[in-house]
Length: 360
Image (tube, rainbow, N blue to C red; front, top):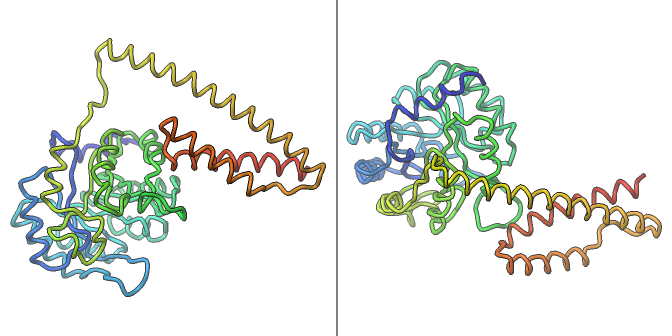
């Protein structure tokens, strides 16, 4: 994408001294509910009121949103509080209705981002609009698919673009509803540093007790804003009750979060940072060398298995390795989740090496 710096201009236009905050319920349930939450947030750091109108659910039978009726509630909330309003759009008709009701921010959900055909239809419906359009990452950890959706919208002359990181589905059980895989939004940020990046901690967490920690991590990684699901009675919300927090909790959270400087120009800081980074570079080089040595040993194991016609995968041995490494990881202040990810990757590379040798 050319002229990427234009993409950040809409964020600068807010003139905020803090990250952008988008708050509001997962789903618009009643007019009273939308208005009550809006008024509770209007004098806080939350600039944009969000509410889902159309809710794509994994399985039928769950609450799928109130539909276009909710747009009238959002518009009234905007008129009464002065807040900007935001909702998810999943097809061209949603776009048409949202524009008719003067919705300021439209976001494309994770399930929609996975379909280039639908994204293109939405891009065509939005062509040339000055509305803010945010793209959630696809359900699966697929950076090119995420970038492709952004490029389709940019090609439709939509300059006020941004992205939302809401985590990625995984078949493995973790502490998150959707694994953050922070390296993916970081890579996107490295490629397009002028593309505003918003974190959706509610969908990453899936539960309210770790939302604050996820928000702080996002700010530490220089994210531009947060989209937090907020409900005055979260336990009785019609959708995603476990991951919503009250407006008062959000307001307090905004006070407690630490906003980091992007850098520091003091010479003492720069020198200390460069020294530490040099140490990291040395350790990283040693890691690569050590992994290379490990794979050479795996090659020898492969030769031995080939000679004796033994299967590559030895589950008992693999489970023993995992158990020992998790314990050693704990002793070195490494989380079990991290150790599992690292050693599963190492194990897969080892299997690949042995397969090449046995099949040669």
